Length: 265
Image (cartoon, rainbow, N blue to C red):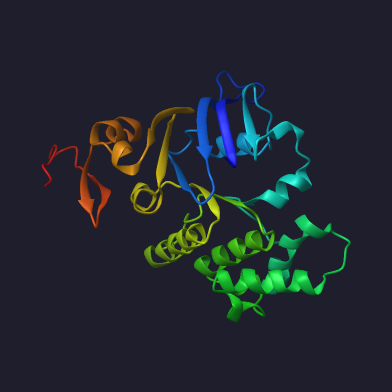
């Protein structure tokens, strides 16, 4: 098991209630698990707690069988690559330079790049389909291109687990699909992935398991078919929904409050 969380609880100082409380989550090799829930429900706080970026108030998290608190940050970076929700780029880096930063997890900031490091960067560029962009300045990229470059940088770390926090935020439909197709292909190649997303339908289409968070607690966990239930989702997202089957995966259809519930086949 790469990641195993039991009763994970994150409580920020000065806050009246925990941001995350009593969460259990497991992730094995070659799995894609999606964490979904409404805005402000604690999804990002959960990721920070799982990776040791904030201390746990209660519970425990083990990474590769070892308690997260015993890992040094550079050790975690060799096993886990995080693509955060937000990121600023104050300098005009080229794509290739940005992806090279992923090698610091293996090298350290002052070590010179070796032939093996350059080969790892080339592989990451190719796997993310951004080799043709390697000379481009990052500020000239579209939203979808920039997300693929960020994934390439994560892959340059040569991790076993890829964690993405809201990777499709602000992307259009085509770029959303491209990104999830890329992550799914990486998982088929043996990488494990934990994806935090607000898009229920993409989560259901591509993940093997889903975790629904509401108010910092687990509202449901299991396969997409088990989790994507109209009553549950309507309660969690505070809006009436229906669920249909689309290409073999459950698909959420929002209802209109004025028109009332519909019936789907």
